[in-house]
Image (cartoon, rainbow, N blue to C red; front, side):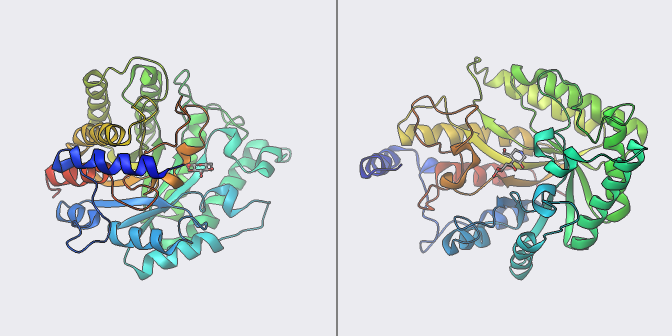
Length: 379
Ligand code: 9MR
């Protein structure tokens, strides 16, 4: 919780920061150029994930912030299979439709996240329990077709980019994850291939994306290798994949040594290989886990901003990358506040997003603006 003392500390600390890192008020007179406009000048888009609940879409101030800063949104949860079809055959599009109608009204584009999410725990429970009849593979194929058709036909051309397949590679060993939808196939890559072909059939206009959370650090080496292998296999098969979604949950996740520049170099090598295969890139879920940064807010925010800037500088040097989305605009609503796998040891709330809980711009917001401003313009 933010106390008066930490707020004061933040203000005093902020005054000591170099101008480039000082937090900026969100709506004051002479407010900074919106991120969406900076991005547009570069042939890019800036956006965020937004949830339909009371703290985000239901909060007029948060909504106004998104309207001001973003040219692109993605529903945090509302287009996931579990949300759209919580029980078999009971389609519920209301929450996603509300977000989409609002986005349309404000000239904001919307991405689709996601058609398939491979860890079994994220499949709807009824899918996991499904029996699929005598010919299991045929049953799975039928269900996958029905699902893709239902989502893609419902949203039609309003969704011009889909995360067709999310997190198919197991970071522990770089192998493809198995779940009740992959097991009837000879290898999971056949199921992944089918997912993209179905998406192409029902959303032929859309950019089709493979989305995952590989990173540049040593602990992610197997994950990166597995994703490269998958992308190469899909290329060989002629699978209609357009782009790799870089989730970009950066910052520290564990106790391993932070190799700084070496990690960025690995990351650049990885992106070189992906774009060399002919895939476009997009940043789909950017935020910074600050668990290794000091409690002091000014120092922490400066560290988050610096990590974000370094990361974006590498990513944005690839002209194939045009879209940057953060996974939430303000710290208080971030998933990282409750992610128990990599919490802060001091138990303080995380500060992973471009705005704070009072919707005041943080140095990370400036880092994003500076990185996009410094990026080469896209053709
Ligand atoms: O932020 C999302 C959280 O609200 C949900 O409870 C969770 C499960 O649906 O998913 C979170 O978003 C994840 C995204 O869909 C895929 N990449 C990792 C994100 C953070 O866990």
